Structures are given as structure tokens and as C-alpha cells.
Amino acid sequence: MKMGFIIIILLALLVHGYVLWHVYQVLPFPVWAKWTVVGLMIASLAMMLAGFMGVFDRMPLGLASAAYDVSTSWLIVFLYLLIAFVLLDVGRLCHLVPKEWVYNSTWTAGAITVLIAGLLVYGNIHYNNKVREPLTLNTDKQLSKPVKVVMVSDLHLGYHNRKAEWQRWVKMINDENPDLILIAGDIIDGYVRPLNDEDMAADFRRLTAPVVACLGNHEYITGIDKALDFYERAGITLLRDSVVTMGDLVIVGRDDRSNRHRKSAAQLLAGVDRNKYIILLDHQPYNLEESEQAGVDLQFSGHTHEGQVWPISLVVDGMYEKAWGAYRRGNTHYYISSGLGIWGGKYRIGTRSEYIVATLR
Image (tube, rainbow, N blue to C red; front, top):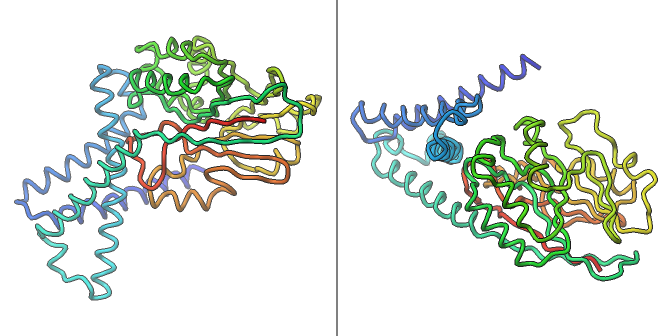
């Protein structure tokens, strides 16, 4: 495990070195200006790593938010710089790209800058335009009336998705007049301090329908005790390997896979009234066959973000049986959400931020 971690770090440093060397080579600037740009890129990476070690929590809230946004946005810039330089190098090897395109080139540097800047502007606008996904689910089980459920996942509230943003989402959810709100984990991004400083728990209590949630892996990253304290103050019904009956519905919440001792879907459904409509909340959409075999009617998951940006979305699609959207196995329906919020830089490129408005009939 330790050796694997060391290898990953070395590969990451090698790839970063590759990108930074190409940035230095392509910029048509004096040497001092080249080093300034490279230095700022290194500083962005260092700032993000420092944030993981708790530095943001010791900074003023506004400054910490800016540092978070800048440092995590670097990852998106880095991704597209890597793609651009790999394409240029392959082009050179195939004798399609002349050498002068990659050395002190105003045109190449300008084109890459404009392209990436355009992608970031588009990605941020697209992220902020939340998609309402309607979903109608018919069942043979007896419901006294149709049930309207708003389902969201991966809010990632924290230094980037702050109080004003969360209040906008609260209004958006309340405007649906749901009977029930389900959250499939990762309410907290990883830092509970901004949620406490801005009293976001009070905004959860403004939601006009009961809120039921399961934990995500980011609650474990945050620190499970801190996360549980916030959930309690927010008035959320948290299901950790537990079950609650609400009218004609049975809602089952699995603990996140971060808990290696969590119960299986079959164990959780033992003794459950099978005449009621059974909804399973499970943050990470692995082993979907377990819900089918256990007799779940609907599983709602998140976690994948659908990769957040292209082409990471292609990688994520290959990692899961279903990485995003509606799905069905036998009599079990699934919806794997790409998330309402996001981790890191607020960009959606080739993916979307969404909330699901499900009607059970």
C-alpha cells in the first residue's frame, strides 16, 4: 500500500514536470517571466496540497474560499494543458507539427490560453445552470397517493459552495413542493468550518419537506464526528445502516463504503415490509446487483459526478456498471446522479449538475 502510494506520487510529479516544462518552453516571454508563470502554477498546486493539511481552516473565510477556488481550478487547467502538449508532441513525432510551434510561440501559447479560458468560462456557466430531471416511476405496490420526491446528491457544501449558493438551492427544492427530500451523501465537501461559520444548518431547517440522507465518503474525509454533529443540527434524518418507514415508503440508508463493516443490502432489508415501496440510499453505486437481489424498488446513488469534466467522464463511465442516469435491473430501478454540487473548481464540461424530481405512482 505504501509503495503504491509512493509510485502514484512520483508519477504525479513526473506528469506535472512534463506540463510545466512545456509551459516554460512554449511561452514567448523573457526567462524571468517564464519562471513567474511556472512559479504561479507550482504555487497553485502547493496551495491545494496545503488545504488538504488544514491550512484553509486557519485562514479568513473569504481568503480561504478564494484559495480553494484558485488551487482546485488549477487541476482543470492542468488537465487541458496536458492534453494540449501530448497532442503537440504526438504531432511532432508524426511530422505534422513544426518545431517552432512548441518553442517561444506566441500563436501556440495564445491559442492554448484562449481555448482553456473559454472552456473554463463555459464550464462555470454550465455548472451554475442546474438541470431539473423529471422521473416518473410506476409501481404495482399500493400507494395511497402519488408521492413527489426531490432527490439530490453531492452538494459538497464548503469553501466553494457557500451559504448564498445553498440558499438558492433550498429555494429551488422548496419550489417543487415535494413530499420528501432524499440526499445520497456528500453534503459536506471536506471542511465543516465554512458550514458552521455561515450556519448552513439553519438553511437545511428551512426545507419544507422531511429530509432523509445517507453518508458519503466526504463525510468520512471531513471527520465523522464533525459530520454527524452537523447533520443533527441541520435536522436531517440520517440513515446509517438503518431503515425508516414514512407512510407507504420504506427508506433504507446504507453507510458509505468507507465503513468496511457496513451491512449488506440484504441484511438491511431483512424483516422489511415488502408490500411497501422500498427506496435504498447508497452513496457509491457499486455492486448494483445486490439491490436487485434484495428486492429494492429504487436505488438512489451519487458519488461519480460523471467525471465532472471531459475526458475524465470517459474514464468514470468505464469504472461503473452505470455511472450516471436512470437504469434498470430486473424489477429494480436505479438513478445515479451526477450531483447538484461539485468537488473542487466549479466547472462542468461535458457533464451537468442536476436535481431529480421523481413522482412515484
